[in-house]
Amino acid sequence: MVFTIEILKNEKQFIAKCKELNVYSYGNSSDKAVQRLKKVISFYIQSASEYLNLDNAEIKKEYTSLENKEIN
Image (cartoon, rainbow, N blue to C red; front, top):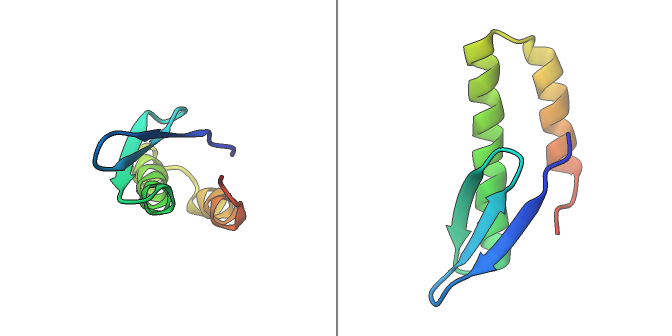
């Protein structure tokens, strides 16, 4: 799985958006916003797998790939 992350900045904080899942996070730095977004994406994938009764091993494999991939 490949996710595109867009970083936006307003007056007070950075906002990270995952375009494919349409989820957001924020932080005082772009790194913090991306770090938080990774947690949101992980939660999203885990929740979807539980809701859809997908094979957890397959989802875990994809999750591991996400954690090992550097996102700029």
